[in-house]
Image 1 (tube, rainbow, N blue to C red):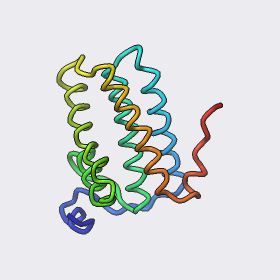
Image 2 (cartoon, rainbow, N blue to C red):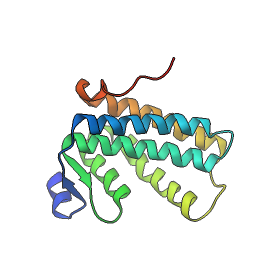
Image 3 (cartoon, helix red, strand yellow):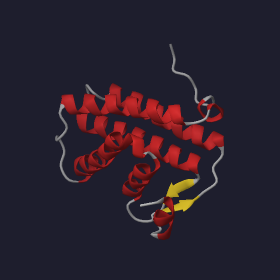
Image 4 (tube, helix red, strand yellow):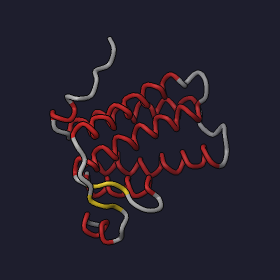
Length: 151
C-alpha cells in the first residue's frame, strides 16, 4: 500500500513539523528506552510498555520527518503500517512492531504479569537498535538537536 493509498484511506495525513519538534520526539524515545531499563527490577510489564512507547515515538518522529502523522482510530497500528511502506528494506524489524503493539495492548488492557525478564530485556535491546537504525536515517540538523546521554 503506497503513501497515497494510506492518505486515501485516512490512516495518515500530511503534516508540517519542525526539526525541533522531531528532535523532541527523539529525546522522548531515548528517555523511554532508558526508563524501561530502569524498570527491569520493578515491573516487567511496564518495562516492556515503556520500551514500546520509545519505539512508537521514534516511528512517529520518522513519519513526521517524511511529512506525515497517524490519523483516526488505531493510531499505533497506522503508525507501524506507515513504517512498513516507508522502510521496506527494514521489513523484518518493522514487522516486529505490530507484534510488540499487540503484546503491549494485552499487557496494559487485559492481563498483567505476561512479560518475562528475558522478553523485557529483549524488547529494550530491540528498542535501542531500532532507535539507532531510525536515527541513522534522519538528517544531522534533527539528530544534532537531541541532548547527548550523560557520561
